[in-house]
Image (cartoon, rainbow, N blue to C red; front, side, top):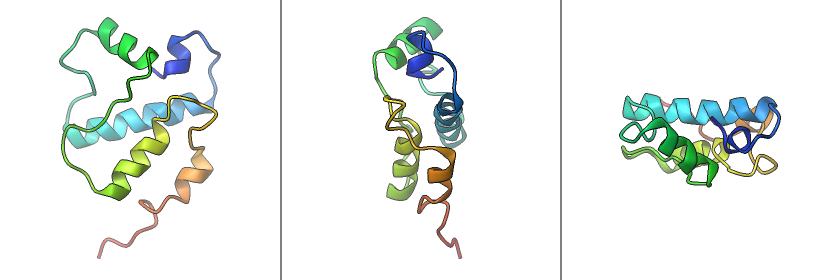
Length: 94
């Protein structure tokens, strides 16, 4: 859950962007962030602004992509349109 939802703010599409960032971390680490703590502690960490990060090492480009999605302030969080222009999605993997 995004920090703003945990603070009681209304839902908007930026909540989905946060969820996508968490899902990317789960894909990297093969378990959700804060998997080793109780759900209430994990929600408190998120509510209080502790941003999850992958445990495993990732490229600078992927780390930046994740940071764009997991910006605590929803006003600063990247939109879907901005993420589609991110260098991580626009690099060639050959």
